[in-house]
Image 1 (tube, rainbow, N blue to C red):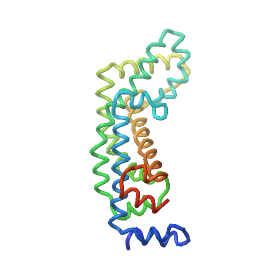
Image 2 (image 1 turned 90 degrees about the vertical axis):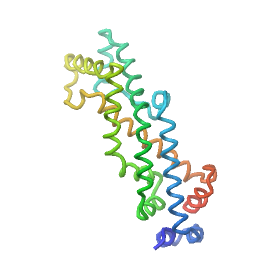
Image 3 (image 1 turned 30 degrees about the vertical axis):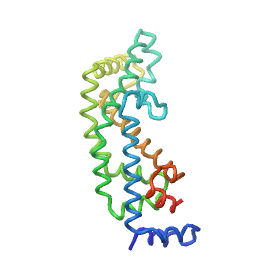
Image 4 (image 1 turned 135 degrees about the vertical axis):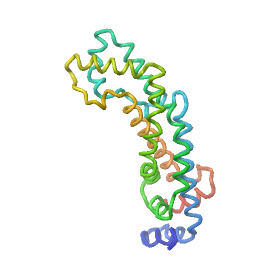
Length: 226
């Protein structure tokens, strides 16, 4: 059964039902793919550059909670500059990792099934993001981790982070778990959060104003599901 027909059945009481009925399965799938590609491309472009994370307060990566808790104490013992360098460094590492996402996101779009298209079209504002997370979160984590590790090692961030971890534990304020001592784990997780967030923001824009997306297929398909 076509995507459009299934959606009409699900929303038979909707004033948009006639418009849904006009959508072909081919159009619906093409529209969803266009939305996926647009969201992924824009997110990577915005984040995978200098200040992509650092210059955007919506995705800027914060210090791990254990450092934040001890920040005042660390500054009192003369580690204020280290804290500031660490804040910038973790964001720079994320910015260099994000371009690695482009191919995996593209492959996810190519793998989209009819069932995926139905879920995205009939889903809420985050259905595109949920699709990407389901398809790419694990492989992207594996892809980002070595890139982040290489950057943190090169700029001395890992050594600096480890030193702070030791100093924080010495204060007795925090007891760290082994995984909390690895800066690359924190950066990778937050970089993925930021990437999916930006994809979600683009999806909301498309759903809210398909015409502004500048694509006929996006206008027709997402205009029909508004």
